[in-house]
Image (cartoon, rainbow, N blue to C red; front, side):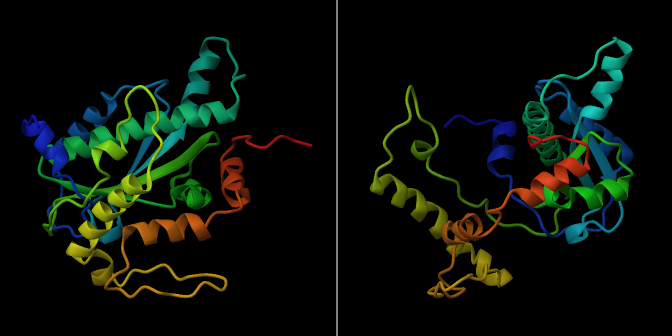
Length: 253
């Protein structure tokens, strides 16, 4: 495999949940955000909020990335246009822009000796974030990222094998062997680190399912299965959050 400093930085990247007291300078922050802006974009629908107050894991920086249609509508109004594009399309385009800019910022931060960690569940807290930052309508918080100088070191966590990720010319029939091989890679890597054991993190089973895992053998494939197998079955809560931020995502009867 080819390598260079950029690739090495990307291959060694991991989610950091412990940070030193060292504060990134304004110059460092501006550099990271500028690098983020150089990501490819569809419509520059990514707006970024920054807080330096009480971030999770003790991180000095707390970014919130938003799908920002408010700015675009102001620009369009200057040109005499109004939006006819559906909000579903707007949000899908915005998700692309947010993802690309956020990842560019992660890579830039790594190159400057910092680490970061994405935070989940942001869309389900959109209304609270809207109030916290006084967001106008048509701005939807999509994902959060804490960042700072790492106070922990560990090996990168596993990823799927390349043959389970890269499919050339057509999507293959995924055999049991391929699925089980990918599961082993993920589970053995997390178990070797003791990731869930150290955190005592195990999603509680719902309904009448019987628990067969201990913290010693509970790993990533069971964890992610419990999430998608038990949570978020009703889209109402998420749709409500979108609409409270000014996006129309349901057909009116």
